[in-house]
Length: 274
Image 1 (cartoon, rainbow, N blue to C red):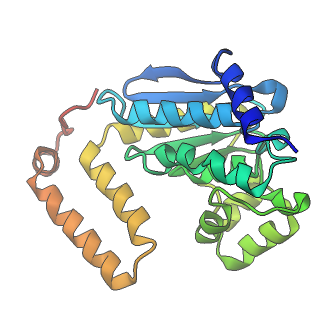
Image 2: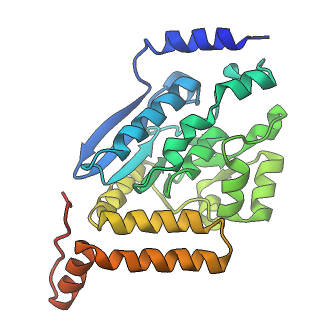
Image 3: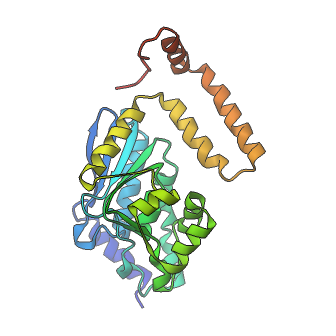
């Protein structure tokens, strides 16, 4: 059985390799993060998870970044976790890896995040897409949580985010059979935001990101915070959270500018918009 020390030594050697997750572009406030590990169909190993966390942490702190687009390229988003990393791992090995630390910067990113999904988004790939706020899928994209076929279950939010996205009965079908759901069905059951032609996936995601980037950053941040936090609260408490955030925004210059522009029938000039 592979030891945790062997795992760490393997990871240290990987750090010397070229990045598999990179900032592909940054234009007009829209940052595009690309996963590029084609030989493994962008499978999530620790190196990729670590680099994703690093990119999201860095972009969260940048004022010139208003929205983030996450893509895996033209043919595959992420085909799942790298099975080679856990095939012989023990419970203690998996615990000591603390992979949750790499998901946290994505889950807690206050900026709007859009997934541009082509090809497979399976297992950890489906979970990664569900960490985003909007999912734009190419028409040939496929989603699924096939962990049960390996004697496992999702371990990065798949059971929790999926049921919140599509409801208990669709989630149970996907989780218990490991079936793949094609983009049109994913749209029908509420797993994705919209479906476009495969060659338009990234461009559509960037267009949406650019549109969103033009709105007041604090309003967007509050919308995301209230939606995500309120989902786990009783309705009365969630409505209170919404009301307080709504009231808070009345002290922002962008709210005053937006109201004035509406009354004066002109385009608003929000602060900080590139």
